[in-house]
Image (cartoon, one colour):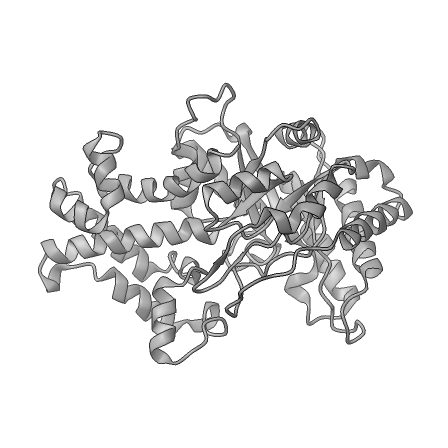
Length: 424
């Protein structure tokens, strides 16, 4: 399996990594499956696609999909795009009681165990065990690492019990010292890199917890630990990876049997991504950065539509999108701070891209379809492409992509993915 290959390669000093696509967005998955294999690659493309506990669980999550539904969904997109489903590794991110933090530990952990079971039975292979959060009846302070490790091991024991014959055994990721999912809620100028002693404690305590649960052999399949390498992004900032600050952390993992997984690598430069892989942060997770690129391309196409069609014929997708977000603020209201004008700006342009929760709304789907139908009627004028989508304009001029709106959308996402491909 490629995850094992990456660990072995890293232990032999090879700069090998993999992109973890943390998105259920159909255009993101389509773009990833249609992306060309790099010319210097001798291996078939393997995609790592992950779902989070909030996004997909036994009750549907915010996507409305159970783990089994998500597998069927990804399989369907793969079939539509002639991508071999066997070349897709499915992962579960932050699997634990995060969704049920307001419940007592017994209840929350029972639901977490059911979720882990359903993920494994559905065919998910990469399992990130995250039990770092305090539950309703836990003491009113930070959760003790021993408790977190014990709960993680209990969930791993469930995963081991429901392994499906004929499918790869679960590969586990441990550790929870990560940026906030989806980006920070406040502007930050720096974040603290995980201390080596804390990383060591997480690994040792979790290893002991696996042994106490009678699943010591499963420890051999713990491939990565999640730590904070010093990367973060929020509404209006990106903290670039600074290798010198993570040097001790990088050296430490060389003495362990695993690698690191880096969360929130969205908007990092190619240089920074390359440095992360070099420093053994070989699993690079990206999500909002991909849907941000999609949103950016949709808005560019909408600007072109405004120049080509009368007001009463336009899709008005930008205003339709904002109207739906205002009517349903649950996915952005508590995250976007500021006055009315500042919130309106963030709804459109925040790097956290909480727009991503709304693309499946029927009104927005209808507006998007209308936009694409309008711009498919004839090739878009080069002057408009140059004005509103200059990068894709150059690609179209060179014959690298077609002059049609769908190609522009896909290329915008693939441009981000290519930054990751370049360092693997």
